[in-house]
Length: 383
Image (cartoon, rainbow, N blue to C red; front, side):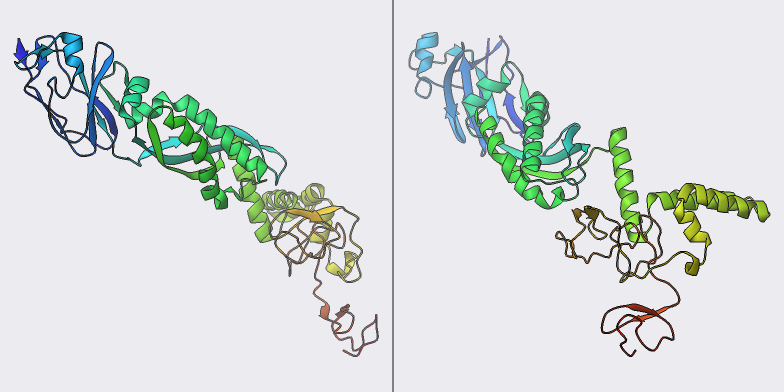
């Protein structure tokens, strides 16, 4: 029978939480075996289902002086080179911060759009073994080692469930949507850290850091890709000043005109009229024939709410300014939709907002007047 003279773990890395020293029936420990525990490590000995002892950094001799239970379990007297069997576990007590996590798709009713959207979140967390005995008893069992990846895989189901429910709860309670959640990632990380800390403490570990790096549309799903494309198109339309219907009409007109000749032009006129309705007529007729009314004289269509042309959020149509971003309400004289300052046509119905034959506004009443007029037709002010 061979005796083991020295036991240590010199190949520790930051992603290995625990490592078991390998021995067999022909390779026994003895009361002369030297145990070397390095800094940031802790050694734990088990035998016959009982904890023999825990050892911190330093050099230790596995005798009855250090391990009194050896006398009870094996009847080992003082002195002599006596063999015994035991499991020696080395626990890494550093705090790695490189464990990545992510959730699968979760459905959330966005408060800004009022629709269900698929979300996905990801981030990083760090763990440190605080109670080596509890960690080994609860997690390791008969394994030969325990890495960060094995730990993540072992708890994936429980962690994802707890993380998803906490994220949805936070966003619902704070009325945060997909367009604004990025500004609240730090608050969200702190909100999730408390319940996750309690979860890991039950396994002898401390959560040293927890970070959410993104919460966004789940573009891995077809639904998420469609919503992402729709939001991208909406942003482009708001910037360029056209609606989805107008975009379709432009495309049809271009396709019709690509045929060339009179038939191509006539087809473009007909198709644009069918696709855009009043928009097609507005595009093909001179502004003088469109029944144009200046914004100061027009009476916008009665509507309860409008979408801000600047931030796209909904607010009462009676407001002169957006309560969310402060942008001025510039209503269309036909449909009442808010338009950006300086827009030539309404983004919703295509109505002309500025005519080429209009001059400056009256300095007294704000009435828009035609070029060459010397007196305001509304208040008589000299221009």
